[in-house]
Amino acid sequence: MTAPHRTTIHILGLGAMGTVLAVDLLRFTNALVVPLFRSQERLAQFQKANGNKLSIRKLYLEGSPLLSYPLEKSECPETFARKPIDNLVVTTKTYQTKDALAPYLPYINESTNLILIQNGLGVLELLKEEIFTDPKNRPHLFQGVISHGVYQDKGGIFNHAGWAGMKVARLPWTDDEMIQKISVVKDDAANNSLVRLLTEPKFAKEFGIEHSTYQEMLSGQLFKFLVNACINPVTAILDCLNGEIKDSCGSVFTSIIDECLQILRVAYRPLFEYHENFNGNKEYPEMDINGVLTTENMVSEVTRIGCDVNAKNSSSMRQDTLFLRDIEIGYINGYIVKLASKLKLDPSCCKVNKTIEELASLRLALNRSRNTNGDWRND
Ligand SMILES: NC(=O)C1=CN([C@@H]2O[C@H](COP(=O)(O)OP(=O)(O)OC[C@H]3O[C@@H](n4cnc5c(N)ncnc54)[C@H](OP(=O)(O)O)[C@@H]3O)[C@@H](O)[C@H]2O)C=CC1
Ligand SMILES: CC(C)(CO)C(=O)C(=O)O
Image 1 (cartoon, helix red, strand yellow):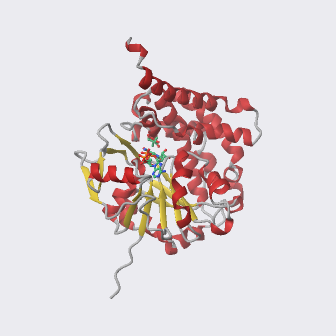
Image 2: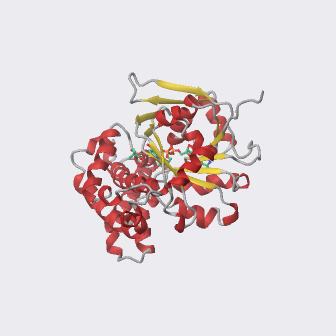
Image 3: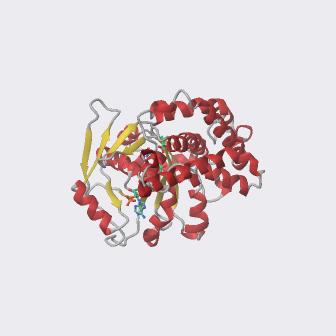
């Protein structure tokens, strides 16, 4: 009798998102989950601090239990088995993607499934233009748009503060594959090992997986982008938890969202014109982009998801400014500024996002300066 097939899934970026995903894969599937650390030193630190266990506190469950699961294997570039990678999850910060992938590029080929689980936009362009430049040797690419909220506390524990699911879709390598038929989803659900793992019923239910066409995921990605363009920099700049600004954020969120939508409508035109071209065609899903991605609806949705569902969360950008790490602003509000320039739009059309980008960078610079020079307010 042959042993049942076991899917191996490597996780590059065992931070908040890598941990929340890995713990549920360990809880609800039989996959071999292998984190990839940046160095032997980081791997040893992890093993010393955690005894090879992966833990997360589920704040949204009764009694906030700390769930711990053993890892069978962890690797880093020095220990890596030098065999092709079947399934790779990238859960580093967006700006860390290129460096993190570099040691593993020889093991990523046209059979590898690579899923980006990151906020923001712009990494797809980076992969196309700077990393997988040879069209004949490109992995199958997927995106996970994740709305779970997780933060690491001062004791190093990851806290899963908000449960909100993850949308998954195959990413197109070229612009003419932007609108996918429903058959692409069915084919991946039946034949692609990564999609089959992520859509295993128990895991999919517990983690909140929705597998869809690219255009449906993109609509969710733009939705999530607007959540991040408001919540992340504003909570970082003000240094607050998400829920604290619930009753006073409407005006600034309106300015950010309105400006983002005007630019996204130009950059993602086929998506915003989907209704006229594809609705009613049975080979494609029905979508109501222009009913969802409006300023009014999005201000209300961003406030609901950011400040209600994730009320107790400290956004990932605020966490980065507190721990003095670089911030993802260039892939969020800064992406809007870059798009405006790429599309040769009048620079004044992105001035709100440019100012937000500058203020968030200033917050990080201030925290770094206080860490070095002391806090002048205490003098
Ligand atoms: N936290 C949240 O609530 C949410 C976050 N997101 C998004 O998910 C993505 C990941 O965020 P998050 O999990 O919070 O980030 P974290 O900073 O918690 O995790 C990033 C991880 O990547 C690791 N890493 C960085 N560089 C390398 C490298 N060269 N090789 C191996 N590992 C590396 C870091 O390890 P090291 O410690 O060694 O630097 C760290 O463990 C971001 O795009 C974020 O915006 C999306 C939804 C919610
Ligand atoms: C869901 C949200 C808005 C939670 O804070 C997030 O995506 C983040 O912190 O990056």
